[in-house]
Each structure stands twice: as structure tokens, then as C-alpha cells.
Image 1 (cartoon, helix red, strand yellow):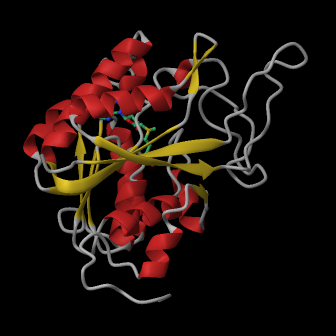
Image 2 (image 1 turned 120 degrees about the vertical axis):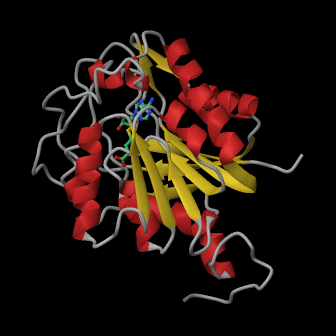
Length: 276
Ligand SMILES: C[S@@+](CC[C@H](N)C(=O)[O-])C[C@H]1O[C@@H](n2cnc3c(N)ncnc32)[C@H](O)[C@@H]1O
């Protein structure tokens, strides 16, 4: 342990020094051996990145929710830190993937974690008393665009390979990755976040992880739209942490005619449910 704990700290179990480090506005994304099992999913989190967030925004024994849980990374991160994880995902295949990962770590379903399969908008009605929400929605339909989907296995850095095929989350009409327009995607995201706001305890936090992306070849400032949606749901914006991913391949998208950005980071956009 680095530094001293303050008895007044109701947010987390960190010392002052540990807390301060996590307030930096950028973090380097960090991988670990257990991440490898998740890569049958097209867009998993890395466990250590999520552990940092959970250690900052919760104490031991608290309830962490991920309404777009995919390969179960949030549940592993929560259980590694003795928090209870609740995950939801539309695609039942991802529950099997998550269970295999969680079984390997000897975490028990129904005790340390809960994984519900179905549309988050419906399942959230049965939940309450959540201490922290961390999640990443589909990035509209980008996996269906040419070049989206799974990456080459065994590439240097195991996540750095070029795209080798198209794999999207599901064909379900409720899948946010299948919404026809970007506006429809945002409206569906907002409906889910309205329910998240209702079940989050007062004064607690929520983090949405997303990067900007293109829709019909136009660059979209997803960060702005997500912040607007969350504020409309009642959340207060408390700051963005830039999660640097400096190991991705560079693509010459516009070269040599126009500037086109290579996204090498995710935005961890943090919100709080303030007492009214
Ligand atoms: C960006 S991925 C999340 C990946 C996850 N963070 C991980 O570590 O594996 C988004 C997930 O949202 C799920 N999804 C899309 N629409 C949904 C909905 N309406 N309800 C629940 N899950 C949904 C997809 O199946 C996909 O697994």
C-alpha cells in the first residue's frame, strides 16, 4: 500500500496517493495474461483498465453493473477486487464466453457475479441499489462497416493485428449495433441510461467508455453526443480520462489527399448522480 487512508473516504478503499494517481486525465491501457481469453469477442475491455476504475469508484463488497457486458471483463475486474458484478448482454454466446473466463478464476455465479441474458432496457427494470456503472455500448454499426470486426490472432502485442474479418454482435433488432441510423442508436442508448440513472444510488458514479468513430465516412464526435444524452438522463459530467492505446496499427485512411484521424485512444467519460 502506498500512502495513508483517510477515515472520511466514503468513495473507495484507496490511500490518498493511490487516489491522486487515478485522477490523471490520461491512463496508458494495460494488458494482462487473462485478457487473451476474451478475444473471441470483437471489442472486449482490458481487465486492468476496468480494475483501476472500480478501485477508484467503489469499496469492497459494493455492486458494479455493466449493462453491455459482452465477454464479462467487468465481472472479472469486480470479482478480482472483491466487489459484486452484475452483467447484462443480448447475445447468449457471450454469457458462455464470460462463464468460461469466470470459472477459470473460480468465481461463482449467483454469489460473486450475476450475468443476465437479454435486452438491457428490459432487464434493468428488475435491478436497484447499484454503486457503480461501467460500460461500453456498441459503436453504432461500425463492426458492420468494411474493415470492422475481429483482428488477426497471434499478431505482435496480440491485439495489434490488422482486421481479418467481419464479426458483429448479433442480428437482434434490439442490439444497439443494428440500429438503422446514428440517431436511433443514440435514442436507444438514452433509454437504457435513463434506467441506469434510476437504479444507481445517490452520489454514485457511472463511466461510459467510447471513442469517436465514423458514420457514413463522416467523423462523429461521439463523446459530445454521449455527454449530452447522459446529462438529459440526469447525470452530471465530472471529467474524461483518455485511455491511450498506443499499440494499434496505423491506417493511411486519407493519405495522400486528406487528413483522416487514426483513433488510438478511448474516452472514459465519467458521470455522477448528484443529490437534488
Ligand atoms: C462494446 S461491446 C462490450 C464489450 C465488453 N465491454 C467486454 O469487455 O467484452 C457491446 C456489447 O453490447 C451488447 N448489446 C448490444 N445491444 C444490447 C442491448 N440492447 N442489451 C444488452 N446488450 C446489448 C453486444 O452484444 C456487445 O457484446
